[in-house]
Image (tube, rainbow over all chains, first blue to last red; front, top):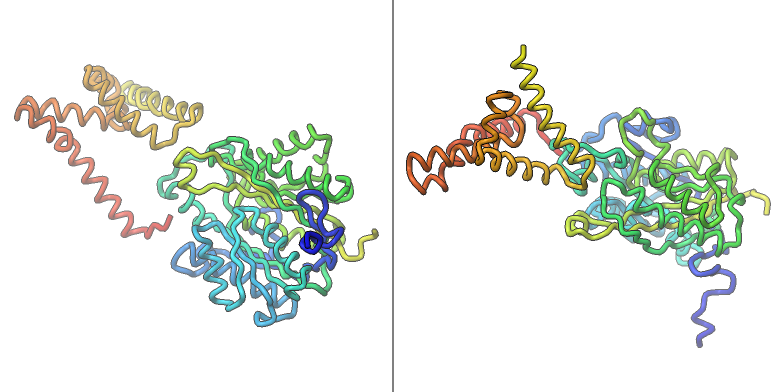
Length: 347
Length: 117
């Protein structure tokens, strides 16, 4: 009996990595962002740039849900399919009880798996989607993720009217939504492997320095991915972290170098690149909309146009709540990695 | 002119101190508010804050510690006039104007600008 319970041979690599036989294709993706993100260096790569953070809604929360729903519909339109042909919606956001995602699922009327991985949610969702498709339980799955600067400020920080000064380590939550449609068959970059991260806590307590809290988790998952997969760092054209921002990226590089992995030339952090330094965002960006919008906009474009052929997307999340840090709990981090490869990549 | 410079120096010194506390320690703006109001009350109680006011005028009357100073002075005056019951009434009586203006101007801003944060 024991044998029948084990995964099929070759599908599990090492302790934390899975390999997908089918290698589901990311057939389409769409990114919708707010005005500040649109003015950043990647502005031209996003499908839609809103000129108003409220997008005509009466609350920030409604605005975030509207952007998420729009990202879903646009992704399906780009894939040439319709909502009723989607097998599962896998979505998450940063708000309490992920209401934003649930409200979008209510609107789209799809079988819905709500997930929370803080800012690692896109990579977590893509992992769950790929497992579901590769396991034969779905032909396709739509992964959708969002964050909004103003909803995050309201929930995690001070009222914006209070005008608290952020320290230079602070990050600016991205207003943006990204959606990705994965399918068993189709054109588009293939999701070949996923490494599921462990919760790593290095004892930091400062919610204004999340990059530092997440960096050890990012380094741990990247290291584990190379160990499990047997791949060398130069297998990938780019290792993409979600939102370590300037402070966290430096820490992750130091931690990886100690383990003999030097990837400074190819470690691209979405949080360090979505804004210009002169946009007043301190260390960079955060929020699950950060890696979602950068992946769905900029990175998908790079994979489709051949700017790079293989990337390791490492979503990074800080697993805390306003209650937990007010009670003095430390801030644990998590990182999930998915390997994406242009379909005609040699080998 | 020297009055202006003194007001700037006294008020600026208090703000600089608060900024240093925020930058160097792990205390939050809420901690700083409570600590500075309390320090103002203590300084007022031992007669020190009145010196700052004589020296810096508005420079000492506008920053946070002035609220602690006002609470203590209100209590001192009211105890002198009404006896021990002034311990309970004097502080709020003295700051009633400031508190009411703060509440009303907050309300006015909310009506005018539709805050959402």
